[in-house]
Image 1 (cartoon, helix red, strand yellow):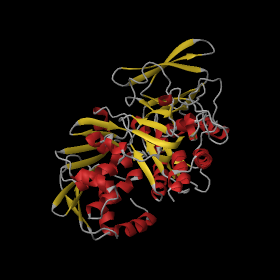
Image 2: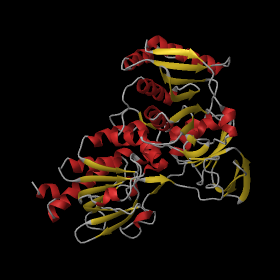
Image 3: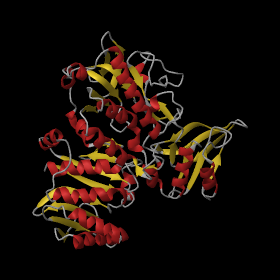
Image 4: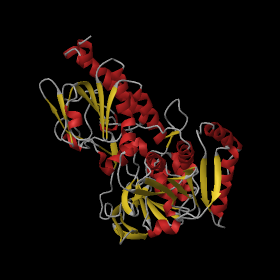
Length: 518
């Protein structure tokens, strides 16, 4: 199952195990069971700390990871390879006694949770968002004996996934009831369990010199550049990492040949932690108002934060088609991430709406999984790069429909088709299919600002070459601005630019808090 190189790397990791671990294996005679047993045996051969015992678990094939003489509550139903291999390695280390990496306050709160929490998460091994959920729930199971978690590979348990109407991953159930869908961090899961900080936690914060609103690459860059000036810096973010959390391969960040969104975000987080930056995660900004001495940011939880300057870097979200059926069938056949949800449509017919780079890349990826892909492009021609179009044309199970205006996504419990109008002939057509992947660009996350700052007709914040808005002391950076090029590397540059100019603004107008007190 594992290559020689992987085994050598794994052997180094498993040397960090601090005690023995027992893998209880429930296997049958099917191919997945055979491969799972082979993987478990290879793990046991690599480390003498890993013991194996045959048993009968709720699902076959599956195996649980336990301390000797104790059921820890972590189970893998299927084979945790692909993106989930790291989840397996971390489970082995943490169950063996190695302390999990997490905020100490959150760890203590998880340990204090009362009641029974039995989580089940449906994943696909190609999903880059699923490991965050799996690893968070596994960590909770390690910390609290009243919490259990089973990772279920939707491909290995296809009938079960379909019977539970799983059409998007990760999908999490708690005690048999739907809990959540999509990427969730440990903090986000704990918050959904009722662990949200209240407004009082923010009310007594001293004013900031620079407050960055948003959590993506532009935000991290801005905060680091501001903090390096020695001034009081904060980040308030609904979701640290932003949309990059949902990005698969990143291959155009100069100096890094290839990485994946979640890993990139983890690196940003580690870099931010190197500086004295007050990170307020899982907090949504509600309004902005320029007062006499400060810019005031009100949060959804009612708290108010004050800062001498603000950098808006709230990023963007997937643009919706805006047709009947899109919202009704979200996660029931309507999807926005082909990497995450594509495997759930194996052998089925799907459509991709959008003929730009994202849409064509999605169609290429899906063509290797599904039965047939139909690409609907509103314009007369595809807009993707020629190299992508050439690749798309070489695939036998892809149909491209230019000049196609989507008018409806149909279904009963789940998606069963899509209706479009040929813009050339004005004739209406309907295609029967099981899934629709929407890939038509981005919308800036700026609705909450209203008229507080100047925005263009697309909702993008208007900035000058300094990253300054029309409001004194308020700057903006990244995909929420009118910069025409929406790229990670450009966002990070614009974040640095905004921070440097915010510092210059503070110097010209009033000495920052930290400098004034020195």
